[in-house]
Length: 356
Ligand SMILES: Cc1ncc(COP(=O)(O)O)c(C=O)c1O
Image (cartoon, rainbow, N blue to C red; front, side, top):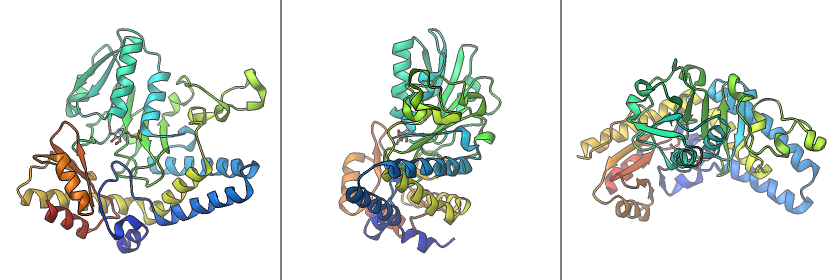
């Protein structure tokens, strides 16, 4: 893998030690270039049939691309606007009644906690919280769904093996897809929700939801509209589209789709195995540098996130940003977090450690 060539695709890295893909990945210059051309053409020629034809073609391309990344079938990939949207669609579409329990972990993001809180308040479902590492052993007879992170956004720890549970499993893959190897079959999950704007370096407003073949057409569709129908012209009698397209977000745009697809092709052509290996190795090196510098690093696994204790995370984050180093603080935890991608290099890590 040519790491120098990869890095050169991301303009932000020319000046900034950008270590924040866990929020939003760096945008590749070529993806922005293609999107700009598309918008210019729209401004010149308007948006009519061709716009939607191209968008549909890109939907097919992206579904296949995401499926290949996850070891899945394109038929089971829904194109969403975010990880959170995928989570909402799963929770809203499941048959849950008062007294049913959803098991989750203590390290979850509001993108999962918000929908879980709503299901609790609106449908009388119990939500029980345990340590992420203990979640597989905590399933009870009342549990109807396990919903937790694949990779913890707080620590970078991986979920334990959840395969073989006799309840459905929803994985929040916001810090998984594109960051670490993801094989939805090996993970043994039923749903995998992920973001397009983080480790896939796409625009905000893109994401994916994988549903296991058993669930793709079994999950109730939340608010189907014209993009989710097999024959939209059939009016009230229109049926649902085949496969996971019935769960697609209707808020799709050509400019967004083309940015996401171009970024994905750029990463995929570099080679996912190499990308995963390089980012995990760089993250491990950063964790070691922080420990060597006397910092307390949160227990983590071989992922792309590194979090460490800081006396005043908001102030330190701002000070680092002023020095051209972008990390984030994790509210309420006393932690700062660096997201390390294959596009980063040792100079980014050294800048961060020196500035601390
Ligand atoms: C673990 C986790 N889940 C969900 C989200 C929300 O992602 P999205 O904005 O794609 O809904 C994030 C974002 O940081 C996250 O880290």
